[in-house]
Image (cartoon, rainbow, N blue to C red; front, side, top):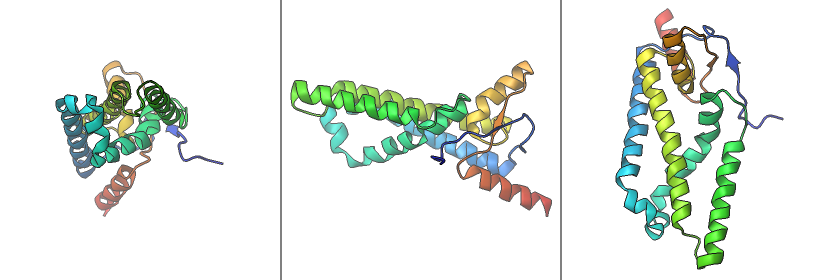
Length: 182
């Protein structure tokens, strides 16, 4: 039974690079991710103030989205297959920090939890944003999470594995390829 976080690496050259539309979409997604990271860093005092952080409902959407994206960023980006391990680690460490805070301060809010959260959320969106940007510039075939290894292969000449994008970019690339064939 599959949990939906399976990796499927393919040999170098197996996938077609994105066309101008796919590259533009990647560039725009890069801008969104990196703008969000900039917002997080610029609001540092907001993050370290536990009461402000968790009382703001809008903060939960990107945190949950980052948690959802974590296995894809880790597994495809680093070419490993830990399935949902990254999610489990984030949840367990967060639960441990919540419990520690609750038993020591009678509150689930803590500087340690906020610091841990901001670090992993910034990592996910920074890795994703830089990967989208590099993929847009060098026309990385398949998943943007393979953009940094693809750049390394261009620089060194060592071939790296490719991966079909598990998100909507694969469908956009296929649609653009069909447009070009007509």
